[in-house]
Image 1 (cartoon, rainbow, N blue to C red):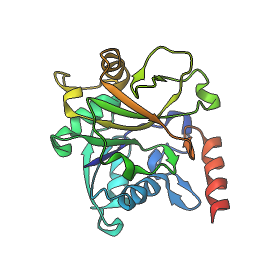
Image 2 (cartoon, one colour):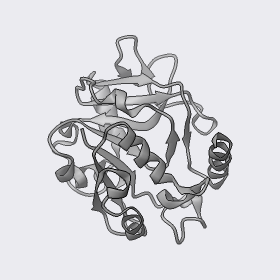
Image 3 (cartoon, rainbow, N blue to C red):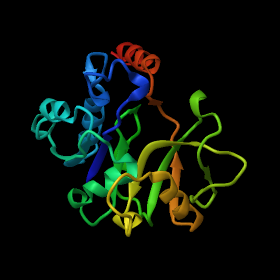
Image 4 (cartoon, rainbow, N blue to C red):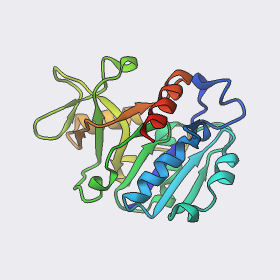
Length: 223
């Protein structure tokens, strides 16, 4: 199974930190955010990783190289200065991801999720990892039925973690260019074709300088 790290976001809420540094290269406890994710994926047996990028993206390529020093192979999907949104970025990289189910991880999350457990799942169109709602997304995104299907309705909603498995077919007939993932997922959910699971471990969305400081403190304390 191949993995993709989404690293093309401009990081507007992180400015001025992201004016000269792409968000995935911002550091916590002395290491770029994206390197934590790469090392976790490699430890879980992902030998081929695709990374998309836009704003200051060449800095990401120069920092990470071909992946050899991490024990993996890294390919890049550049989008230019204007990012293509999540679905558009995935569509732009499909030629690198192959014809089978692939993993996508947001480049601006931190987690201890055991990625290896996703490698043998049976997936229809998509499989999402959900988490308890953080303060900045108190209403959540999706529900989870007892059947294991993700649902839009229900009494309890959870937050999409930014970790998901997808079949290329989810993106069929979507033209190239900027495109959001949410509408695609909601249509597939309405058709009963998206499964999910809830994780209870460590997870953070590193969306603001304050949360980056929290993560820095967390990783420093773990040492």
